[in-house]
Length: 181
Image (cartoon, rainbow, N blue to C red; front, side, top):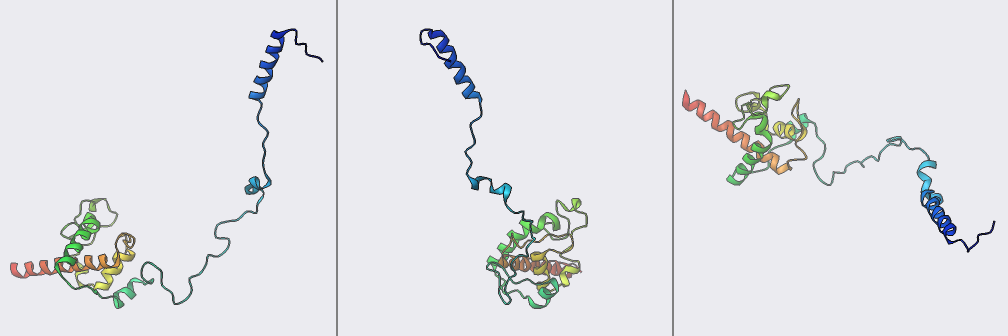
C-alpha cells in the first residue's frame, strides 16, 4: 500500500487516526526483573522465626527492669524527698492522669468514674492507704485490675512524685479525721 501525498486531507485524517490509536493503546511495560520480586519471592509469615532474645543480665536502654507487682511491693522504695517542688509536680501529674477516675480528692468519684466497668478505688480511706509505696508505684507503672499502665506517660521520677502527693493527701485526710473526732 502506497500513500500518496497528493491527497492532503486523506493524509491528515490518517495521521490523526494513528495518533488516537497510539494515545489509547497502553504503553508497553518495561519491567526489570527486580520490579516483580514481591510476587515471586518466598512467603514469610510474621513470627515464623523467633524474635531475638534479650541477653541475660542486661537492662533496657530506657526504663526499668521488668518486675512483677509483688516484687515492686517488696523492693521499691521512694527515693525522692518530700519537698514543695516534688509535691507540686506530683499534684499536676495526679490531676492529669489519676483524677479523671479517682477524683481530685482521690475518693474514686472522678468525672469518668461512672463510665468504668469497675468502680475506681478510694485512694484516701480505702485499702490503698495501707499499701506500701512500691505497690502503688508498680500499679501506676504496670496497671492493676482495670487500671491501665501509665509507664509510657509518666517517667519513674514522676510516678514517685504521684505516690508522694497521694501520701500527702492521705496524711491530710487522716489529720482532718483526727481533728474532727
